[in-house]
Amino acid sequence: MADDTPIKIVSTNRRASFDYELGERFEAGIALTGPEIKSIRSGKMDLRDAFVQVRQGSAWLLQAYIPHYEMANGFSRKSEERRERILLLHRREIDKIRQGVEQKGFTAIATKVYLKRGRAKVEIALARGKKHYDKRESIAKRDAQRDIDRALRDR
Image 1 (cartoon, rainbow, N blue to C red):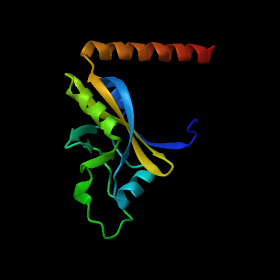
Image 2: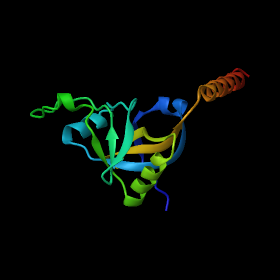
Image 3: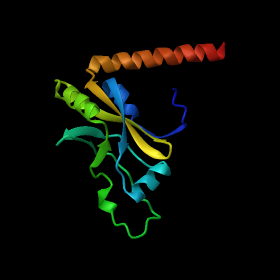
Image 4: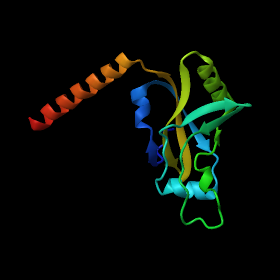
């Protein structure tokens, strides 16, 4: 059965595909407080430095920035914009992430946050850092594709 539920992409980590070779991907829920989900629904979140760490049998999202929701009265969490948030995953997914991170050169990074059926989901990818020459190759491919698209458009 195909999952045709519409999703609203809130934030993407565009730098991740440039700095890393992205491998296996996982979808995880995020445990949030009320003002945090309201801030995400209004489209305010940043994944620039976000990564995932497995500790004590749970996966944690670290360094993800969710700004304070201005309309939230009574919640004093101005200093908790980059707090650690637990990810909701199945045990075998957590084990796959842990095994992937234990391999030399791999890390788990957050690539995308989106709303699916009103719930915030984060896409996690096992990634390996690119070398400098790999980044130059990515730039060359992107420029070549841009030239091809421009030529087809002007044709």
